[in-house]
Image (cartoon, rainbow, N blue to C red):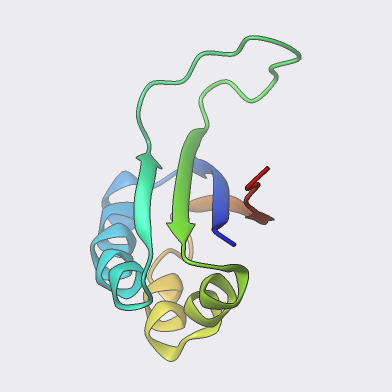
Length: 98
C-alpha cells in the first residue's frame, strides 16, 4: 500500500536548506519515492496555525520503502546538511486504497 511522508518545515536559513534539498532529492528517487508537493503555496482552511511553514509530501510504494529511505545512509548524510537550516516535523502515513 502506498505511503506518504508529510513534512511541515520552518526554514530559518534558506541557503543551507537548499543545500539539504539538493542532496535529499536523489535519495528519494533511489528508494522509489517521488515528490507530490514541495514548498508550494498553502492555504489554511480550518484550524490553521502554521502560517509561514512549508509543506513537503513524498510518495513511496509502501511504508517499508519510506522507512528504508529515511534510515538510509544516503538520506542521513543529506539530513545532516539541514542542521541549523530550520525545524522540520515529518510524519509517515500509510495510504488508503478503499
